[in-house]
Amino acid sequence: MKTLGIFLFKNMEVLDFAGPFEVFSVASQIKEYQDYSVITFSEDGFKISAVNGLSVNPEFSIDNLPELDFLVIPGGDGTKQVVENHSVIKKLKDLIDLSKWTMTVCSGSRILAELGLLDDKPFCTHHLVYESISLISPTAISCPQKRFVQSDERLYTAAGISAGIDLSFFLLEATFGKKLAEETAKYMEYTNYPLPV
Image (cartoon, helix red, strand yellow):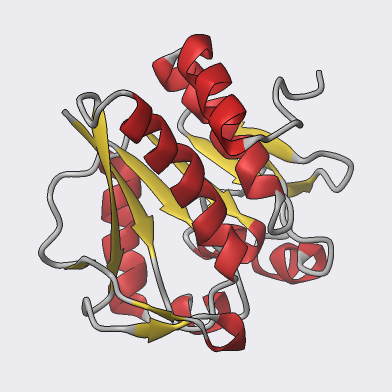
């Protein structure tokens, strides 16, 4: 049984976390929750407020997580505060190191940049965030023409907001197979899958 964790934080973009949550949790449901579970966590496990005021209740704090196999880091204006929280950044780095893969959505790439994980590597982010990433990691290679890219062997970055759904489908297929990805897209009525080559 594998575990996929989604990091939640104040002022995150709603679709950045809700899009991947829907893709992976629907796929888990289709498999009758036999292959993996999807969990959410935040710094302290307390209720957080996303962009535009949506209240979200994480299941875990970052200190009492089950072991994660896969990690999703959304974006949003709140990433500016996350990168200033050195304790959380260090703990996220530990989770990234242990995960089979990590994906970021939108300005979630700011966290990877702060950790030095985008140095000399290709990345995607929201179109308004490329300049910010270049200031944090001047050698990072921006890919504004892409919906998502593989930044290194175990890191993937998606462009803004809705692009996280595309990357989730890509990783769902790569990790659990094309059949499950097709069934998930059909259930969700997601017509952008199969993904454009």
